[in-house]
Amino acid sequence: MTSTFKLLTKYLAVFCILLGELTPSFAQVTESDVNLQNLFIDASREKILGRYDKALELFNALLELDPQNAAAAYELARIHEANGDDNLALRWGKSAAEWDAENLWYQRYLADVYQRMNLNKEAAEIFRQIIVKEPDNPDNYFRLAYFLVRSNEISKALKVYEQLEAMIGIDEEIIRRKHTLYLGLGDDKKAVLELERLIAAYPSNTEYRHLLAGYYEQSNEHDKALAVYQQILSIDPSDARAQLAMAESPGKVRDELQYMESLKPVFRQPDVSIDLKIGKIMPFINEVARSGDQELAAATLELTQILERVHPDDAKGYSATADLLYYSNNKKDALSKYLQTLELDDSVFLVWEQIMHIYRETKQYAALLKFSENAMDYFPNQAIAHYMYGLAASEMENYNEALSALMQAQLMSGKNGYLKMLVSSRLAWIYNRQGAFQKSDEYFQAAFDLQPESPEVSNEYSLALIDRGKDLDKALKIMEKANHLVPNQAAYEATHARILYKMGKYDKAQEWLEKARSHGGEQDPDVLEYSGDLAYQFGDLEQALEYWKKARDLGSVSKMLDKKITDKKVYE
Image 1 (cartoon, rainbow, N blue to C red):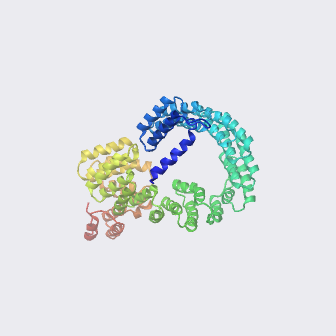
Image 2 (cartoon, one colour):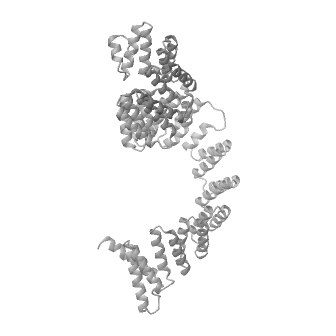
């Protein structure tokens, strides 16, 4: 016996039971009754087999013989629902509910159709009628309240919950819903009262006290929240969330470093959720990102390193450490931690993106090319991965490959104006390298149109003018503005220095290169190569060779660098 036949047999057996009106009990079964029943069975079979057109034909034929057959109307409604015609589903659903008003199955189905069509008041009315016929079923009250809320009749929904509560007593779900509704109405007193009722009913359940404490925190009533956390700890001294909250001492000016020290005992507990711990240190990670505060970064790193030890198989701890190292300008160690993060969880694109940024910022273009190619395979719809691939290929002078990837990134960037700007600027940079200066200028203009004072575009445009050996005064003004808008960026300071170098203003160029080296340029092969060139111009060949060799060791892609080292002289 096939599974389809078994299902069909079971389905038809159920409908034979449901079809009381076709074969009334204690009455003689007529030939007409038998014909109706057979017609219904044939129509149902066609429906189960997915032959809806034939099923519709048979059910309509049945209704011609028995015009108010509720079961047939119900089946017609279900077929039209399957065909995506809600209007006809509603028409026949109404008919079924009207012709057999005592059949709650039909009433509930009609309410479902109303819900799908967003006719919430009508659905609520259905459940009012159902409650009259079936007053002891709590689910009917929940459904009625649900549709009243969707109809924005909040006060009426609250009355339904009160009616249900009078029937079944204190119930967690009812109180939670009432609490939420009172919050929506802005009635804070009643919202709190509901949570207090829940706590009174379940005094040993600390989750309800956490709800109340969380509410007080959101309302900036920190002292009240603290009092609730104290209650929680009196019930369960090991409650980590309450311990963390008490350590924070909300509402008081605290020593951040002392506070983080107080977090360590809880962070060492493996049974405390890592997400809860991460939530406590995220404000400090964000502050390090904003301010670069190294003392704060070091203190927060102690906590993330505890996370790594206590939760060695969770990527979040390693990712948090990587973020702190990156914002502390320790890109080498940050890269190692991000790669470790991917070994545990390679599904978070933000980690992939951060790794690509580090490869770009440290000018590891071969690594960036390979990594961004993998990123495109894993996340083919991420335009930034295509941009990074194009950037890496262009720096390695694979211009055709770079253009292809960048054009794809441009198509995929959608409404991301910042990415569009970066892509246009890099396309302009490539066309400049190829000597297509008019096309280069058009793309640079497109980039500036998207963000007129972009330091990224200003830098690439200035480098293009340096390559051309023209309009250096213009380039200098552009970089003066860029370095004013975004100070202390080694790459921009180095470009500024390079312009001055090309203008023969070596003393001023030296000042800007010293700034660049103090802001991370000691790890930038371009900055080091420029520094070597300048040292050579000052007659210090030994210093020049030292800078050039460091640039080579850091993976410089400069074609002239090896020749400079070999011949011990500058080549422009």
